[in-house]
Length: 625
Image 1 (tube, helix red, strand yellow):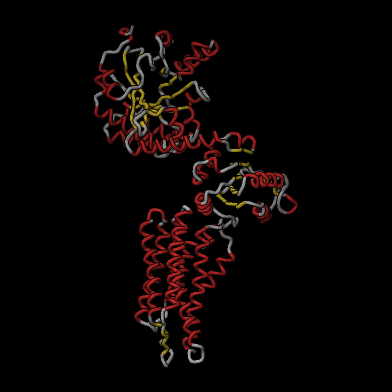
Image 2 (image 1 turned 90 degrees about the vertical axis):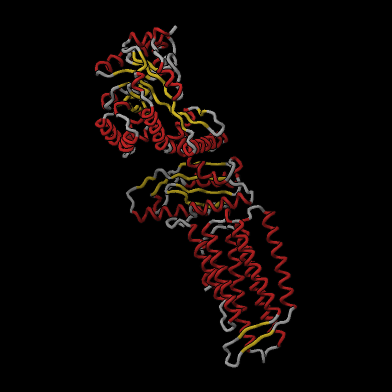
């Protein structure tokens, strides 16, 4: 059984991992131990024809192999848990010293052999045997201690497999100790080795089945080992976004792909990993090897692959010159993902060299993601309200709810810093639900109508609008807090309207039927198209601060805005002017028949308590100096 495992392990493509080497050494010791077990039985059964010294020497050597097999399990576990060289070597040297003591005692203590007349009971006994049992059990206890003490750094699957091996081995040793005729220790060790091979060390688990390259799991394990060894490396990522074929069959396409993979894997000084459906990551030992390999690869991809060179592949290239640029090797997959999602240069030129600025941006984004996540988990999400003034009624009639996040130090994180990150990584869906629930709770706990507030505006992101269950969730939240739907106005942006339009319109209609109204937010930025106003069932259009400023600073922009206002008014829609900061701006907007004014001229966004204090006063323009 062990020889079959040796053959498979030796003939499979595998990573050069320390744990793999430790397993293979332990596997070889197990083969030697079982061979010596069989040899010792032959020697005992033929003791009358063999020199006594030779028989005892063979039996003692077998006992020593058992001790070293137990030592091998310690070596295997230490390789996994001690990442620092100093700790690892100290642990190995201490256990090796114990092994040497075991060798000396086993060889110098007396041993006796026994073989019954019918040959059914063949065993050894005496001080030498007892010392072998003692040291083997000692090593097993050391293993158990390490597995318990270092539980936090050992993967659960690895810990369970090791525990299974030790339990079955120790159990068989106890059985054989009290039943000498049952020679099962060698078989139990073989079963334990087989479990380790199947559960932990089968090289197949590190391979991509389609290409035969190492997979993402293998990359993670290998990067961890390089980090433990404090070795630096370079990376070239091949992204296969496009391929061009000349009316070829699927068989020819596969042949071309395998030819390409075969060529890539022969580039010197590197290892290839299939990390995604359209990615092959090449990890080079040195920067020089990476640059030379990149040049060779680029040149080869200028021509076709397969029969008649009929398959043309045009990969994009991402190059990380040195792992010294990143804080931890575990950040490599995240860095690649970030670069692919945020680099126009890669799309336009097909080649991107990662620099320190990109790495810094990636870490800043990741830190912001952590800040957002912790803020959601620790309830550090707050809602500020900015009053909106009605020019027709001459008072504050509504407000916009704006999200604020505080970091661990209690400081407010600027919205611009976290909103785009939350939208990028999908956190905005949960963040939006938290904000809306806080708004509904605020409305339900305070009688805002007595202050003249008619509705609260809540911003929506593109990802929220495109979520199929969005409308149902928001309706459920309003019902939970008994908030009347007419008290909610949802602000949708042009960006949100552009994507997944069918789902967006379906969600909007469901909410409109329920009684919620909508505004088109940030009109005047991005794609700025009046068609969105025509297509989207909105009641209010909000002019962005940028557009308002352009009205006062740019003559051409003034005519554009006048025309837009004329058409919007013609469609019987209301207009909100955002970013109004001066009396001049306010009076101009009022003269233009703008329905609502929002901006610092009246108030900055303020927390709930301050907002309630603000609207409790009779705020009218005539009171302002």
